[in-house]
Each structure stands twice: as structure tokens, then as C-alpha cells.
Image 1 (cartoon, helix red, strand yellow):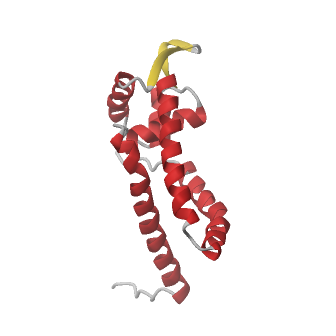
Image 2: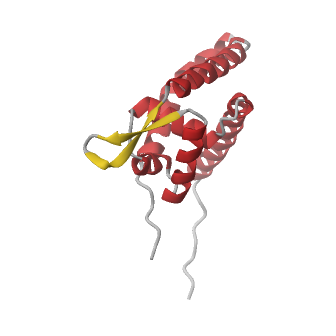
Image 3: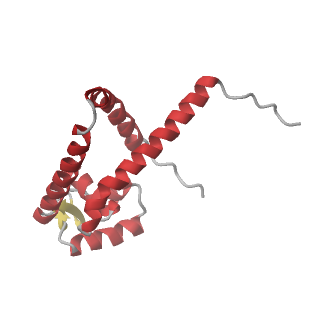
Length: 162
């Protein structure tokens, strides 16, 4: 015997539509904002690693992998690429000399500054082109969008089943 499903409420439908529209808009904007980084050889994954190290400071590759939600094998390859590109430096971990820490290099920090400036300049021009009401709505939405992003980034990863 199958359980009878009830139709979602009108509010649930509106929330689902809002979530879908927000996801689409954020993904499209993120894609457009990543384009300058890709032109500099900085893929989205590399950019995420550099930004994480910039925000949180030096950390072990395993901690960076966890924050980025990538596998240790992917982190190993990414670490090699970042080091070869001169964006990060491997240093011994003072707490355990057998382990290493990844630190943003001067070149990596300069690359982030340059990319952020390019992105901010373009995005600022786009925002300036909005009318005052749209700018005010965007400004009002920013804390909510930031809180949503923080909530998603702070959620623990689901554990794969054995």
C-alpha cells in the first residue's frame, strides 16, 4: 500500500521557485566573475584555494581540502599546481615537522589582489548602471545573501556510506 502524497503548499512552491531562481542567478553571476581569473590561468578551484588561504591563513593541505570539500587526491594535485604556479609555498608545520603547511606566496597574494580589483571594477560598473531603487534592493539583500553563503559553507560534509 502506498502512502498518499499531499500537494506542496503554495508557500512551499514559492520558496522552491525562489531557491531555483536564486541558484540560477548566483551561478550565472559567479561564472561571469570567474572569467578574468581563468584568463590569468587561475581556475575556479585554484581561486577558491587561494582565497581560502588568504582568508584563513596557512593550513595543512588536508584542512584546505576539507574547507574546499575536495578529496585528498584532488588536493594533492591542486597543491602541486599551486606550488608550480608560484601561488603557494609549502612550509614545515611547526606543530609537526613531518607535516607541511600551505601559505599564500607574495605572487599568490598579488594575483588575488589583481583579480579582485578587476572583478570589483567590473561589478561596480554594473551596479552603478542600476537605478537607485535596484541598488537599494541589492544593498538590502546583501546581508541575507552573505548569511546564506556562510550557512552553506559552515555545514559539515555528508559522509559517504561504506
